[in-house]
Amino acid sequence: MPRKKIIALGGDGVGPEVMEVACYILEKAGYALDILKPLCGSEAFQARGNAFPDEAKKLCEESDAILFGAAEGPSVAILVYLRWSMDNYINLRPVKYYPGALSPLKNPEGIDFLLIRENSEGMYPGREGDIPWLAQKMSDYKDPFGRTLDFYGEGKFAIRLITRKGTDRIAKYAVDLARERKSQGFAGKVTCITKSNVLRQSCGFFQKTVEEAVKKSTEIAYEHFHVDDAARRLIRFPRDFDVIVTSNMFGDILADEAGEMVGGLGIAPSACLGGRKPYFEPVHGSAPDIAGQGIVNPTAMILSAKMMLDYLGMKEEALGLEAAVARVYQEKKYLTPDQGGKATTRQFAEAVLKAIK
Image 1 (cartoon, rainbow, N blue to C red):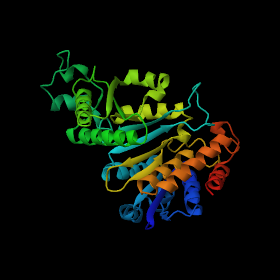
Image 2 (cartoon, helix red, strand yellow):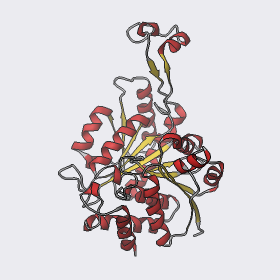
Image 3 (spheres, rainbow, N blue to C red):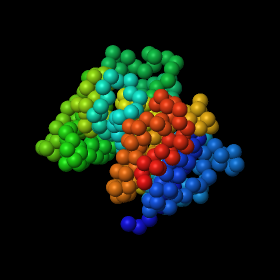
Image 4 (tube, helix red, strand yellow):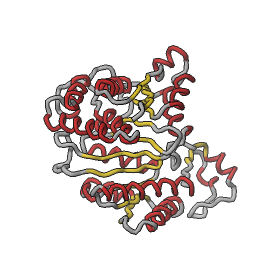
């Protein structure tokens, strides 16, 4: 297989720390990857006044895939570019329990499902403003109580967009993924999550579109839950789920809940796909409270790299990396403090690397 060009953007907070050890593992394991690490994030902002210099952006455009650590402050510009400018509308978040991880559930064994979050619309990015301005632009609009927007006076509004294009493509991806999962021995079921009993038009449209996509694949099972009900079902019946598809904000919230169920955000990886260049990032964010202490759990970053290997067609390497992570958790000798251990970030990474070989 030809070597792949990977751009590693550490970003801010704990991002550079988890990126450093993830790249260390990928390089020492001998995978067919050329990993470039351009200046970015807070370091670039301090040096040049720009968290995402043009040369880093150019490298991303030329890459096969991008690894991203975390963003805060000016570095949010990196995330905006990777997600919206590159149109990565799929946010894929695996939820899988690795025995040995510190789960709050009494019996987390066997949890293994995928959550697909529409990544480009809904409530994100924030389309907000002043209510009086909106009242002026929509002077004829009346809410379900017959009131014009002038009734509400001073305050703020947010706009939620659910489009045909956005919903069609995320629904198709969910069905294709459920079909693929079924061939691997999983249930082959799509669970659509909305709040269509209240948001009858926007959520109703999302639900109807997903249902139409599922109907085209008779071998795929389907179910729908309202988001509040789904939140409790995730905890009560986590092994009943296979492929979840939902809109942007609901997916953001539910994915964090699901990540906590299997051990916390330090374990939760993600992939952002569908656009010009995919990027892979941990869910945990910049975690400034523990940055620089050498104790952050790099599992989410390492498993995000595993997802990248899968995407690049490096299936054996991906399986080997995941198996190594699972072995470290099962042995429990080199777990980080969030998992009840005393290992440093580097010690955990060294243990994973050793388990690969």
